[in-house]
Image (cartoon, rainbow, N blue to C red; front, side, top):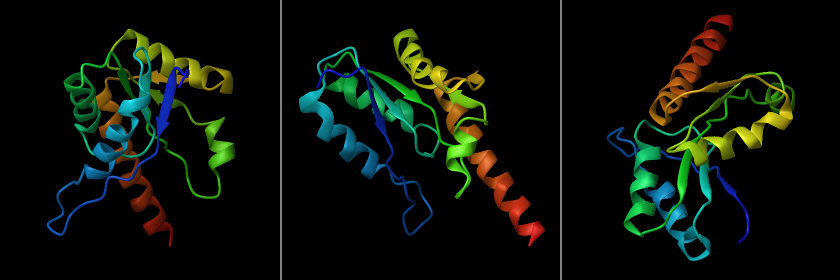
Length: 141
């Protein structure tokens, strides 16, 4: 209670048919309902499939909560997270101006460039970056 931003790092796996499964994200958000007072932002930091941010926004709206959503997916390579966090431009988005302001306020102190996107653009951008990294690492090996 009493915070402006809640950072969620929750996996969103796929099922046996390779369909995205958002149940982990949904369960996490529902567990937060009792402590949400209004005015907060739920910031998704994990790589999630496109549409997850809107799903979270619809969940809080159905509860009648005035809570924003931001998708700022991490794009850090294993073993380089601390360095890359302060060197790699951060993707920021928000469901409204307050959520975007909360996201920016979280990353501005790092002194990195911020790239403002829509929530869905941020979700897709991290998927493309992950695909590029897999190809780059695979061809290097």
